[in-house]
Image (cartoon, rainbow, N blue to C red; front, side):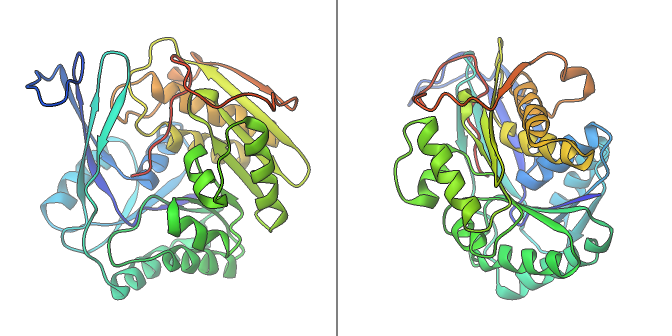
Length: 326
């Protein structure tokens, strides 16, 4: 089982428009609402593809009821920490070209006691877990030591830990040496405190993190796919999405695909190819919809150990799109 932890969950409202024009009135072409937050998205993708999972998150009251209804619809087992006001509303606006604009609420003002309660709830599921996955932003009042506590508790049970967060929370977590981190390009630049304009620069930065004790680093590169690095090797994978609809949750689906493949004994190359396929399939779906097995035959994925090191990491429409931390 893969246990996900989402300390700052959200109801994600995705609105489609023909073209976003700042300062003007728009007619919404569609509205899509999903239970969200990065760890929740990972669990939704895993459940949609028959992988055992448990989503742990704070929620209470009417938002918890709505969240439960949506997770039940998606077949996602979940465990709540009863905290009022913990579920945010995040708004995403997607235009006809697939360009995504996000407005994320900061989350509930939280305390050290709240963090302790969350970690206690997670610990009850760790003995049954193969992976514990800590995902997303932290609500105000909780700092990166939350993820350090998560890593320490999982490690005490011999369970592997993946972390997908950003900024100070990621820097703090990296010092505790999780088994896997999955930053995107911008987050990796922030983590190593320098620009990484080419794929070669990204590879060098990822190898530096592996040398410091991270077992594997998977970097999502938006339209340029993703790169995976461990102590033995490195691979790059990419996919073309002919009709992108939404980038929301694409990175979460990439991580879910990676974990699902690793759990089945896949090599780093096959795990990366699976992750990029899941992420690309998500881009072709509306809102934060996660791909099911029927969606995964569509993206054509290429994977190679011969990395194009001089590849400049700039936007190219129609490829696996950028990820966004919630």
